[in-house]
Image (cartoon, rainbow, N blue to C red; front, side):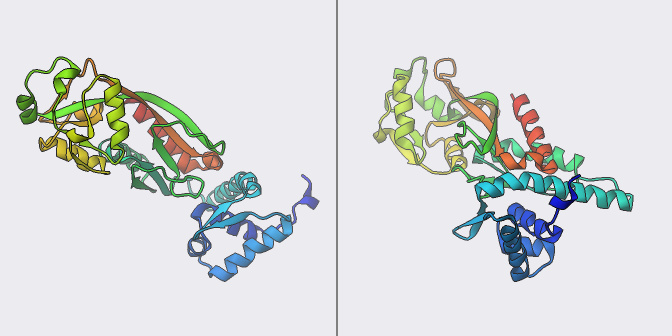
Amino acid sequence: MNWAAIRFDWNQVRAFLATAEEGSLSAAARALGLTQPTLGRQVTALEAHLGVPLFERVGKSLILTPSGQLLVEHVREMGEAATKLSLAASGQVQSVEGTVKITANEMVSTYALPEIVKGLREDHPGLVIEIVSTNSLSDLRRREADIAIRNAEPTDPDLIAKRIRYDSGGLFASEELARKLGKITEPKHLAGAPWLGFDETDEMIDALVRRGVPVTRENIVARSKSHAVHWEMARAGIGIGLNSNAVGQKTPGMVPILADKLKFEFPVWLVAPRELKTSRRVRIVYDRLAERLAAMD
């Protein structure tokens, strides 16, 4: 052990770690029971001691600099070691506690995550799961979420990603609308049918046209940025909607349209910031999501 190299103040290191975990000085100060100026001075003192900036400000948030990203993994290990030391000294068994924030699109958030969260809470009562239901991509580096479920492979090298599976989706109509449409055995039979769109309607139309479906913007009778609203309009019989087969085939009153000819496959990726791989609670949630999402029908 090189004792001479250990010259930093643990309180400064703890302030740095809390700020990295919480995303802002004010949130870190609340977590540690300190005033914001006191915590800010501790972070500044650590930066001065190390000779490198650890954070940069983006809007109202603080994000780690490259130097901060390099150091935070070591500091997090120190924090976990300190926690284990305190628990061992008090005779307690280490438990998994704290908040883990998961971001996913509306349909995954609504139909897949509740059962997974229920199992996590039963096994780890100290966990608090926050679900950010959004169809836009959350910025994991700015700690808008700890874990993301996405349908596109991330390109950021500071993120770790695992492709869980390939999912499939298709076209669905209410039983009432399906009766009005009559027998449909080929894509051309959908000419003139009413369709539901998303905010990216042109992309949806292009994908359908490439598969031989005669649909134009004039066929879009209603649209919504919300996938949940889109699906409820489909259930109401307003038009043909799109959804994953896992949801569509299990929804009462919904009929698949040309399921054998019009199947759309897409990957399911599980993504997290690279520095969070040493966080035990995030790793537990990450591994559970990987296991359960891979096993979904």
